[in-house]
Length: 421
Image (cartoon, rainbow, N blue to C red; front, side, top):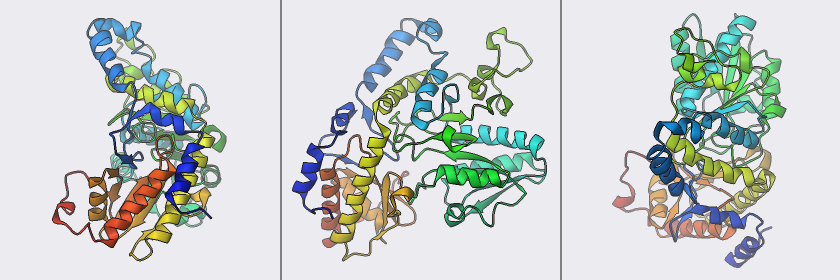
């Protein structure tokens, strides 16, 4: 049992093996940042890196930087760094586009492959609780394909049970989020992938809410493909490019639908006939956003220096503490923890519900303690071990207690919603 006082939390911070990583990030003073599961903070050197690209590589060297500064190879260079973080293996990952676009490309490629291997399979399964953009992209793809293709939604309980009902002989592809963005539930990648393959389907994982926060072994799990972003736990910056991973044995079987010139085998021959490059480069489409890609590299370099097993240990310790403090100090209020208690089922966030969740989060943010809100009534707290400590968790729950005990959330200014919530 944790000794529930701030002094004990401070003592744990003093012996934290990851404490020095806090110096790698620039955060406003007097701020506790609990929203790294939505947008990671700025790494040290990000502004300088952007300035170098803009002033020197673009400003001075101009078009020559495609060669001299390595711009042309940047998607694959960063892809190698991402591969090391997600257990992908060399030559399996490329950084490019957005998660939604990469998901569309990879799902289309998977279905084209299944049309050869299992032509009667035309159903795409995904979680009802998946991030909505994933569902929208799959629905759009199915509509474009027509000819019997459809998307079916399954509940998280069906996934954790191994698909006893949904995995019929119609299913071609299953697209799953590794960590539920609302609740923080973590799904067992290896076991789930095995169940999907046993049912005759391919599987794609969305790693947006897990990469950089816990150990991932895509190759070891037997997964077919994965997509993810770099702006959450990988701290790449707002809108920084996403990535695609494809199992090594499948890369050259995949034919993606957005076959732009960057994925051509010989792009500078300017041939009117398309021929895909060998390897993961065939998942590129058009010219890359070099400034944002260059800045994203800093966050990837930080993640590459970290022992992800140590990150996971601290993440679970922080969330254990958060859950214990919420249960012991907020018990007089209609607060419910919706994140699983079991370590094997928990990502790197804790989500709680309250009928006045939006106003409570607004009041908390006004104090410099930044989490975020998701419908319905969910307050999300991302627990990022590289820049959060145990005392931060204590202070957060104490602030919540004050806001709830004194109904400080019940102020019109905390109930006004902006375009982004």
